[in-house]
Image 1 (spheres, one colour):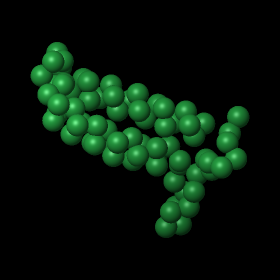
Image 2: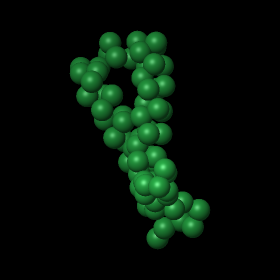
Image 3: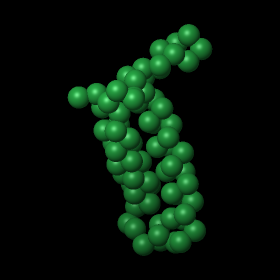
Length: 70
């Protein structure tokens, strides 16, 4: 069931861009901010592999944004 207020794709410079690309960009921007906060708090010193935490947080957030679209 698609939401009426979110189109599946939109035109950007005469190219059809899927809405998931916008969700990807929003997730990347949000993860950048979350990464700065987690680094300032020293959370990355407590985890075994910080890069894995960053990637998993990105995929979790991107999945939430993707589920909001579809």
